[in-house]
Each structure stands twice: as structure tokens, then as C-alpha cells.
Length: 55
Image 1 (cartoon, rainbow, N blue to C red):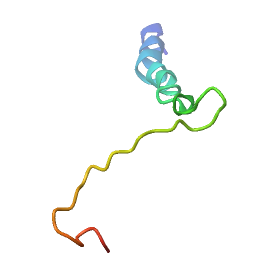
Image 2: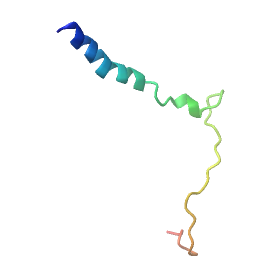
Image 3: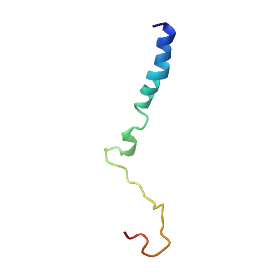
């Protein structure tokens, strides 16, 4: 392999994989004790007809 091929392989294949390893760390959803953060959930769908939400 030529030098430019090795460098191209590293840039195009290995570098993006190394950057994706810590893309979405699980620790950002935990507090300092390691417990899940309390999040206020907002309902995105509000039924307009009575009884429509009951399945």
C-alpha cells in the first residue's frame, strides 16, 4: 500500500469510528450519584374527543 492510501483509509474509515465511540455517552443522563435524572415529561398528544385515549 502507498502512504496516501494508508492515510486516506485512516481519515475516511477509522477516524469517524473513533469519533462515534463517545458520541452519545450514557453518563449525561445520570446525576453525580449515578442515578437517572428526574425529567418533567410533557404529553405531546392531547385527545380532543372524550374517551378517545382509552384503548
